[in-house]
Amino acid sequence: MTHDTPIGPASGSAADREAAMTSAVRRMTHASPHLTAMAGGAEEVDRLLDDIEDVWLDDAGVPLHLDLHRAALPCAVVVFQPGSGSHARFYFQVAGLLARHGYHVLVIDRPGHGLSGGPRGDCTIEEAIEVADTVIAYARSRWSLPVVLMGSSLGGLLAVFGLLRGSTPDFAVASLFGFTAKAPATAPPTLVLNGERDAAIPAWATRLFTRWSGLASTQVTVVPDAGHLLFHDHLDTTLPIVTTWLDARLCSTVPPP
Image (cartoon, rainbow, N blue to C red):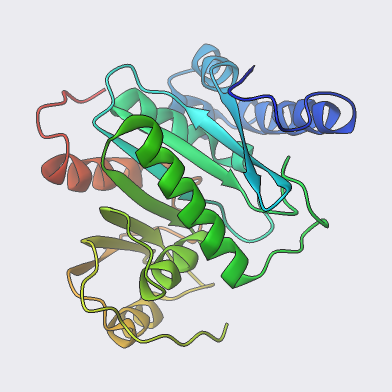
């Protein structure tokens, strides 16, 4: 791992926590032939993990950690919101494969999660949206590239909630609590994915939620025979859907990985 900026904890408990999380997702992936195959084999699993760069931002005095998966020739930056209670390192495969396809990916450790500071597990919806806006601004200032806001499970809902609250990515991809907000007059093109067998957020609920949101230019795609963790258990099916949709709008000249 490399550290992009030195403001975050680089030793002691934070370093131990990073090593433990990385070891856990490495073991989990190596233990699953399906997950290992999606990465292209055991050596590729290790390469995706070893290539992660640590980025530290200052969130109102609290260290905010991001996993950076760097593309060789990026045409856009993906800002990724993890699911409920999860952390950036858990999503190393979808992020690493998107990077291989031609996108820089910044995966957020929300305050209180992963390596970020703050009370453990304590991050409100409003705080999560503000953090995503901070990361979107950072991505634009650093690379001057289009930004895609993307999320899984709760992270997908946070992406849509952010659009309702005025977040301004160029595109959004969401895999789907009480929340109310008036739909903005304009919103970026948004792809919403839902597993056909998703028991946590059924496809019918996603369609109703999307209609309720009032966001224009939103496409709902139901992934056949898939459950809830689309960017984990069904990455081999969902990644081509996402990259095809994004490439048509951002990187149509980038060859497939």
